[in-house]
Amino acid sequence: MSLRTKLRHLWTQLPFFLWLIVLWMLLWGQFTVLAAVTGLAVAIVVTNVFRLPAAELTGRVNVVWLVFDVLRFLAELVSGAVQVAWQAITPGQPSAAIVRAPLRIDDDLIMTHVGVVLSLVPGSTVIEADRSHRVLFLHSIGVRSAEDVVKVRESALKWEARIVRAVGSRAELQQIRDGVDTFAERLDRGEVTVRRKEEESA
Image (cartoon, rainbow, N blue to C red; front, side, top):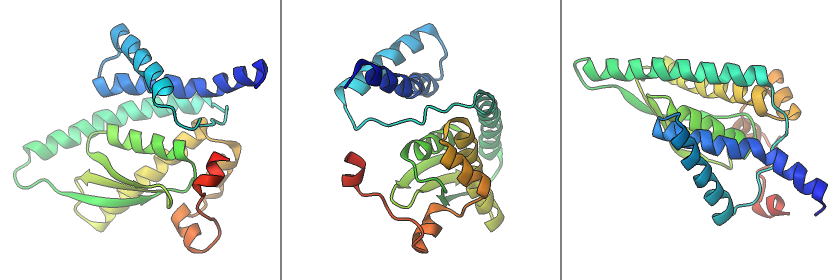
């Protein structure tokens, strides 16, 4: 591997490395120098000791959408916390449900980003992920009707679209713009196939 290829690989992996640091800080709920330094140490250990096949990023970043996603995420953190607090003080048993939320994009990183965002927002947690069908199963509070289930699924699809607009490939962005059906629906119709592990490692 030439020096130029190595530098290109490092550049495309930099956003993922930085995301590990940000994720560490979010998990601890601290945006401090100490949290950043420990996050850096953890990211180095994770990427070097627990080696996995390299996740090839698109190299495309839309800064406007990225900033919008961060602001939207912070807003949903607040609204989610208020909803959870209201559920806690409201008399009676809090309502909750397990919701199946199919996604549209056949990409591990996009699916992971969506799952992380939905889990970090108070009120919802990813309890299972079906990678072959691109489906997330969410435990969501405040679900009392079929309309609420639809809202949870729409929230997952909206976050998928926002993330694709920020860091997805041009092909994935076009799929979002075209309003394609979920991956599971296209898989059932035979329009797409499940990627095999041998193909991914090739």
